[in-house]
Amino acid sequence: MPGLHHQRLFFREFRRNFRTTGAILPSGRALALELARYVRQPPFHGTPRKILEAGPGTGAVTRQLIAALAPADALVLVEFNAAFVDVLNGRLAGDPHFTSAAGRVRVLHGKVEDVAEVGAYDLIVSGLPLNNFGRHDVARILATFGRLLRPGGVVSFFEYAAVRRAKTLLSRDHERRRLHGVDRVLSRWLGEHRLRSELVMANLPPAWVHHARPVRSRD
Ligand SMILES: C[S@@+](CC[C@H](N)C(=O)[O-])C[C@H]1O[C@@H](n2cnc3c(N)ncnc32)[C@H](O)[C@@H]1O
Image (cartoon, rainbow, N blue to C red):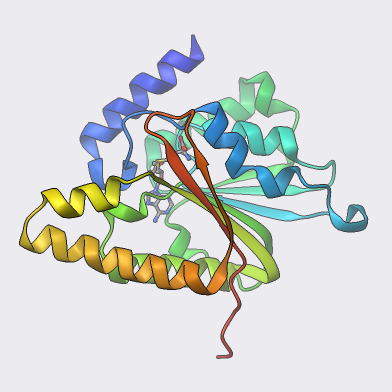
């Protein structure tokens, strides 16, 4: 059963690469659907869109993105973990939910921060576990989203509800300072760019999905 196989693999990668994997299980359907909200909106005058997914993992969100693609849209998947890259390529070759779009989906193995394009994407959907990173990494990733998006483009990403605050209360010195730093960077960025945030209760654990339209500062 592919679902169970993906869950096992995800858990194995969580134990091996806790910081970058950032979750025990792939996202549930409700969370994936909320992340795909802007991809589901029909493109303006049918103009083809270029969409990027950062951190697709085993493809739980990708599946909903593919279902929401308009016929001429293109999707780029940027995944850091080689084991997940193999799963994604396998799904594009043999999973009926993926194969129909295989010609319009490209998998890149690497970090999203290293994607060199500027203003190339209409939409970005991110599964990156920002709360596991340092504040400078979070700031760099948010700046990357702003650089990759065309003006007016939208980025959608999630964080588990209350986890950052709860961990801040429970952790000590260095870790608490890190989480405070991430909180400040994320809150300030969302304060400037947020379109809407939706709480998805039907996920384990419940999660906030943030949708934002970054305004690029002049270089
Ligand atoms: C929390 S998992 C989300 C997986 C999937 N989107 C889901 O919702 O089930 C985070 C994913 O981001 C990947 N990742 C972490 N840092 C990354 C980076 N800098 N660039 C690209 N992928 C990254 C991890 O390998 C992992 O697949």
